[in-house]
Image (cartoon, rainbow over all chains, first blue to last red; front, side):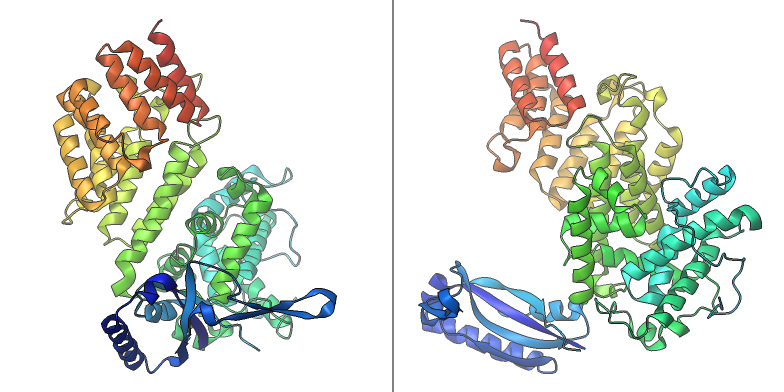
Length: 115
Length: 451
């Protein structure tokens, strides 16, 4: 078995404009998703908006530079993730297709296996 | 050297001969009959031998290397031992022996890519037990499955279409990277990088080496057929370059369609695609004159069409049409069959063709299908009606920059005697067409309009 990270990307502007009812509905869908796939989910979280992000990069003279904002500015930003355990990509994709998404989609990345 | 798996069916030399047999058809020293037999086995059995070897190695690169080596040995051995009755079985045994030998020697070496993910039963058995005792016979159902595993892995939707096409040519047809690069007019380095990246993704993301479950089969077969169709259309109407078609790609797509038809006999869309290839390719010899100039369907010498291909394709399309509703390849094949069935261009049953395009629009709406339908309307109801249908498409953003739309408009305008507008349309089509043979045809039409 291998682990895959399912990264949930969404348009933050649309996200910010969602009504409380829409947010409640989405939360409910994620809870149901979690129950449906409890056997293979190994973790997952929703993230605060990129307006809360701080980036750290190597700076000049061997130091580090700390800046306000996400690592890369994109319209669709990382908004949450799940970690799943799956035998192969097809199984991971089957779970990924079932992730509730509103304002974007998901990316599936295999986790590097440490031998 | 000791064989780890007991007796080989035919003697095998101790050391590999460093010659690549592939399309290069052997070394000068090889007996021509042997070279021809090896080339034939390369074309017919590559996928079979490779798929059976991947089962042992669970590593595409290693399997390719061993299969290559087996073909090289065949070139050196068949001259003395005679050509085996079942070349595919001989090659498979030799390739698998080599693989086991390398795996055993290499057991402790650090492996770069993880092993392919296979069905649990296969994986549990381990390489030593991968039914080496079983005869490597093309008729064996297990082996047929192996080839399908390879097909579905090459055409997995998680790979880019370009990568799917490249892998199919490389792994299913046994083309070298240089040959695949030439087929798609990119540099060998670019193609090598594309293939390496795809293989790495298969291993690292664990794209499974297996036949998809029944619930996914329809979608996955469609993905395979899309790759074969792309291969065929790239060969049949080369989008760029100096020649109208690249026969090698057309031939490969037909080979693969035939193989798929044998492996998935119950799938109507496979029959449909094979019919489409046969019924279109049947006109190959009539499509260009001796100087390589394009000849339109209307002007082709129909006696030069390949009657055998038409007969085979027509039988297949009949079978495919029994599925309701028929799929897109089946409908395209049916349209080709109507053309092929007309003794002369004037006898073409255009209303039936328009009707088939209507059905195609329902199952596979696309601007290009709509364009072809508009052209058929022009032949069914006259150039004025055709022009109306074409002009309705002029606003479609997908067709902006599509040379065939301008060329079709130009033809209808010419037939209507609207010479000035026809000239403008031909000039537009010329600007948008990259294939040299098609450009020459348009230029000739433009000349014929006079001034």
